[in-house]
Every structure is written in C-alpha cells, then in structure tokens.
Image (cartoon, rainbow, N blue to C red; front, side, top):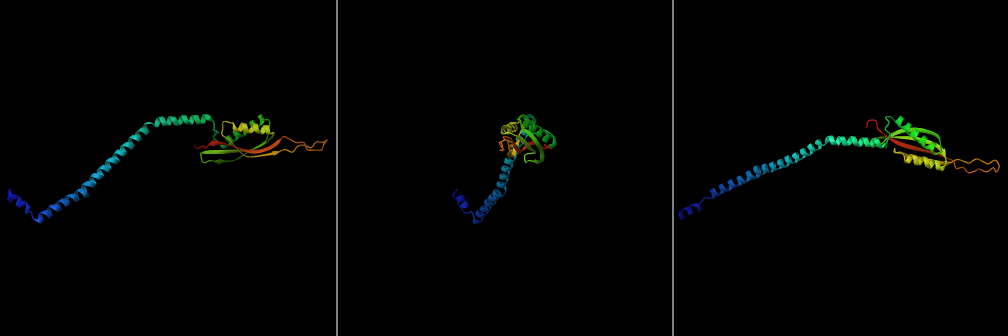
Length: 200
C-alpha cells in the first residue's frame, strides 16, 4: 500500500501539465461552445414565447373584427343622425342650405336680409370642408340677438366670424331739423358651417 502511495506521489510534472491542459481545453470548450449554445437556446426560447403571445393577441383581434366593424357602423350611424355637419355631397348644396337657414333666422327675428355671398371653401386638417357665407342684414339689436341665438343653437356646428355692427343714421325731423335717433343697425358677418369631404 505504501508502495502504491509513493508511486502516485511520483507523478511527473509533465503529467500534471497534461492534466492541466486537458482541464483548460474542457473549460474553453464549455465557455466557447456550450455556454453560447445554451444562451442562444434560451434567447430563442424567449423569442418563441414572445411570438406565441403576439400570435394569440393577433388571433384575438382578428376574432373581434366583426364586432369592431359592427361598432364602427353603429358609431357612423349615430354620427350621421346627430347632423352636426352638412351631409350634402357638394359645397354648392351645403352653402345653399346654410344660406336658407340664415335667411329663415333673419326673417323670423324681424330683420331684413340685404345679401348673402358664398366665399371660397377651405379644407380643414380634420377631414372637413369649411363652407363660409358672408351675410349683410339690417334690424334692431333684438333682431340681431335672435339671429345669433338661432345660429348658435342650431344642431349643425356653425361659427360666426368677422361681425361688424354699424348704427343706421336717423332721419332729420322736418319740424325740429334735428336728427332723430334710430335703433336700426347695419350688420355684416360671416357664418361658417362644415361638411365632410367627398372622399370621407
């Protein structure tokens, strides 16, 4: 037994060097080949799981497509029923409707419509065409208030812009030769309505 132990202790330095080199080669193989392969496998597995998750989500979205389209149609119907914008196909028809509404408001308020003029339309960033009508009318302050209230409370969205109010000069009294005050006003303003673009 002692003899064998002595023989084991007599292992030459060359053998230790060979064993050390073998261990080094094994470690190199582990770090250069096996560790990257395991890491790549884990990464691929993670990507696979992520793709499976995305695929499930996409399938869920596709499965809800019909209900989403039905909801969109319902929203469109409600939107059209609210009449916030002109549903006419052309700017000419939309501006004619706007002029008719303005004329009706002025007549009902007891004012006098002098003229209406359609100004060139303007496309907005939100997918609508802005229809603008320039209005000239005369009447007293109460008539103006009624007209503005009628336009403001209309179901359609309308914007009043560039309003100009000027008093009408009173007539001269023949007896006193003084100018009598007048409650009549000359009023100019623009009314803008909106219509959907034809390609919407």
